[in-house]
Structure formats: C-alpha cells, structure tokens
Length: 280
Image (cartoon, rainbow, N blue to C red; front, top):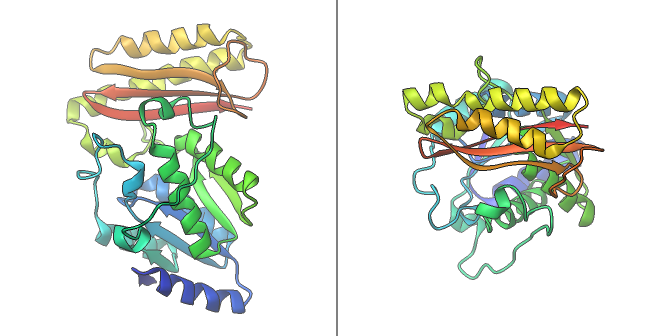
C-alpha cells in the first residue's frame, strides 16, 4: 500500500493507473477508522481495480466551538486496517497541502444544507462539499463511497455531483451498527461507559418510528413525537433535532407520501450523535 502526503504523489499514481485503463474507487474519511469505514473500503475493493482512502481531518467543516482539536486520530491503526483490506493508496495530507494560505474557493449546496445538521452547523456542509470536490479532482475516481449514517451528507454530495456534472458515481452504503444497535462513529470514543450504555436510546427510538412509517402512519408529526418521547425518557439525552424530511430536498414534511428521511441528532452527556432511517 502506498502512503501519499502530497497531491502531486496521488496525481502521479493516478496518471499511471489511468494509462493502464484501471478503475479507481475513493473512500473519503477523516481517519480513526472503524467497521463502518471498513465496510466502505471492502465494497470499493470489490467494485474497482484500485482503491484510494483519504485520511484527512478537514478543518474547514468544523465550527469555532466544535471538536477539531480533539477529534480522535490514529494514523498507524488506519494504515493497518486499510492495508489489511486491500487499499492501494492512503492519502494523508496536512491542512496546508489542501488549503493554501490564500485559499478562497468554496463549494456549497443550497436548500439541502439548511435543515437537520445544517441548522446547528451552518458552515459544515460547505466545508464537506469543498473538500470532497477537491478529492474527486485529485483522485479522478470512478466511484466514491459514503455511509448512510451521514445521510444528509450523502444526499448533498449526490446533488452536488449531479448539479456540477462530476464524472463520478456516488455509492451509498448501509449504516454499520454495534451489536446493541448504536451506529458506528468515531465520536463514540468520547462516551463514558454509562453514556455509551444510554446511547442505545437513539436506535430504540428510531426503530419505533420506522415501524410506524412502515405500518402506514402518514402523520410525520406523530412519528416525530413518538421518537422524541422515547429519547426524552433518558435523562442523559438532550435532543438537538428529530425531523422527518422528504428524501429528495431534505425539507420538513408533515405528511408522509413519498421517500422520507427520519433523522435525529442527540447529545448524550454532551457528546453529539446522529442516526437515521430512510423509507423509499
């Protein structure tokens, strides 16, 4: 496995692969890789001749009071996981490699970024779209792999690719969960033992909401109320949002009459966790 820290190194390797007619899969990550990331890498390895994993904590998607400085990192462990799974190149740049001192160009997607996490993290998705655009251009990948746990991110990236005519296929992959239902996340490491146990309330609440939708409930507000009541029964939980939105535009809906995303963001003992379900 190659380890590249500069854009030039990646481009030189990509140029060689392209000359050989090989397909390239890209898995964008912020490192501290877990089984969720592993599932993306495994699929990329199956569907492409070569696989690039980016391992980069992107500073421009963090707000001033967010956890950029404390975000978990373990590059040695990331390299081992990537190598074991068949990754061909891991791209691990410094922020200065990705963003020059006079960097002024940003990419964003209106409407889809205004609800859900966009309300409390107003700069987040512009940072995501910008770094992902750069990674697409650097890697020249044929496919890129994103997890459904970050469903709003997945929808926004898909729309950006469509609107801006990127020559890449976006592959959405299922949420990977712990045995007790908690969605895999790098931020789970912030949880104390007690908070980790209580965090399962998110999945329990969403299971109830999904059962309501699949049994024919059309009133989105009833679904939101049911999910909220279950989460609020846990004293350590503080709701950021519980929302049902249409899956196409990510705007709040009162009536369930098409594809919907039901998403939650909840603080468990001050650790912000997200989870969701989609009903097509």
